[in-house]
Structure formats: C-alpha cells, structure tokens
Image (cartoon, rainbow, N blue to C red; front, side, top):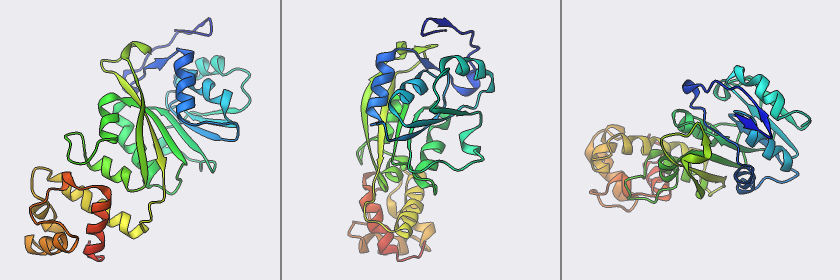
Length: 268
C-alpha cells in the first residue's frame, strides 16, 4: 500500500474488516463532514493505516486514535510521523481502559460487525460525544437514518433518534477502498441533542423499542403484552398514549415511543 509516496507492506486482516482509504480529497471531505475545527479533540475509532487520522490531525487540536490491530504499529509510526497532536492507543475501543477527553467528537471508519455496539455505546454510555461521524456500509447508513414505517427502520434507528439526529453526507464507492469491499459505503453524521426527554423516559422508551422490534411483524399490542401482564394491559398503555390498539411499532417515531413511556408510568 502506497501512502504519501511511501510503500507499506500491510497484511489486511479480515477478522477486523480492514478497508483503508488513501484518496486525500475524500479524507479531507470526511473530516469536513465531521465539522472538525482547530479547537476540537477528536477520538478516532479504527486508525487503520492512519490516513484519516492524518487528515483529522490537520484540522483538530488533538486526536486520540484507537487501533485494535497491533500489527499496524510500524505503518502508523510512518504515516503519523511528526504529528505531535496525535496519540494512538492500541486497544479495542469497546474494552478501553482509560477515560475519554471531554468534550470530544468521534470519527470512525467502522466494519459492519462493530457498528451497532460502538454507536450504541457512544449514545447510551456516560461518555457522550458532541457528534459521531461514521463511515459504514451504505445499507447500515440507510438503517441509521431511515424514516418510520420503512423497511430499513429498526430499533437502532429509534434508539438513536431519542438522543440525536443523523444524516448521510456522502456515498463512498467501494473502489475508493483498499482492498475494495463488496459493498458501497456512506458517511453518516450523528449529532447528539437534548430533546427534552428525561433519563427515565429514554430508558423506558428503549425497553419498549426493543420489545416492539423483537416482534416486528406483530402488532404493538402483542409485542408489549409481556411487559404489561397481557394484551389488555398493553392496550391500555397504547390507547393512553393516543394510539389505536392495531398500531405497529415500526410505524412509531422516537417521540411516539416516549409518549408510550410516559403512559406506562414507570411500570416497565
């Protein structure tokens, strides 16, 4: 792999879903999408070959980059040489041992298998970023940003919408990666926001969301019945929230699930 005119021998690890980008214009565009400025501390998850890390370092005050593959140490030492505002932590982000700097923004090029756990860790954990900009498979990006009632709409869409807004900023073709994956990707910018819901309302809404989408093909009444002592109990909550008993969870917005949480009155 050639980076800035230098050749690096990289054994791409399928275990970690490694696909790297070298196009400087695209890397700069991702950093711009993330809204990184000279006053920002950026946490990057998955430094890879360090190409995006370098692009972020050009804009940010500092970058803390997590990389799970220890074999990439010599590559990162080369691509990030002379960048004093970058610190690489060779550790699985989901098992990290140190607190994150605050405030911070997250930028990540994520393989499919860790997208959901990392995104939900950032949205639900105690260490909340200002924003999360992720490069993910196009299909996953569509799921994160899907409107209610569509096939792509799911539990992660609703859970995200309870605390944040998400939008796709660009589609990235598979030919932009080395090695090329089998699918196209997209950049999603997730901006965390206080939507006026209490912590208890959000926690209850998430329980209702999980129940609703675990039984996606059933009516909400049937899906929530185990939580409220049967279908009659579920119907009372659904109707108290202003919805008909025949409603399906996949048609409800995050705001609607908060209405259900309030109607539940702490019974979940």
